[in-house]
Amino acid sequence: MEYQFVKIVVYVPSSHADKVREALVESGCGHIGNYDSCSFSVKGVGRFRPLEGANPHIGKIGDIEKVEEERIETVCPFVKLKEVLSAVRAVHPYEEPAIDVCPLLN
Image 1: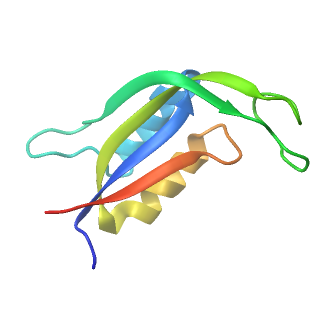
Image 2: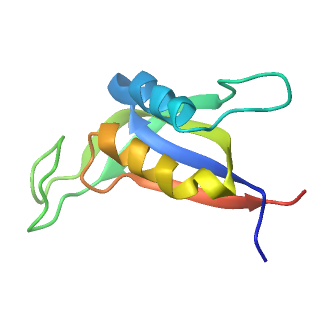
């Protein structure tokens, strides 16, 4: 089944949250009715450990890292999903950004 819209959730260091929000909007996300730039954010702490072969933006190989991050949620037309994911990855500082895509029922 194909969906008209998806919800995109991106976890990003707080230092790069505005760049990610801008990329989401510029690539076609966040339109709800007569509004644009719609998103929701909540702050939290991201945790990860870079393994051998990783090229971490933050942290060192083998050490658990804690980073102040934002969870950014927005809606996206399904037809723009590939373009949106490329735009987010282009501005996201992490080698492996955490991005969730959830289909939305009409």
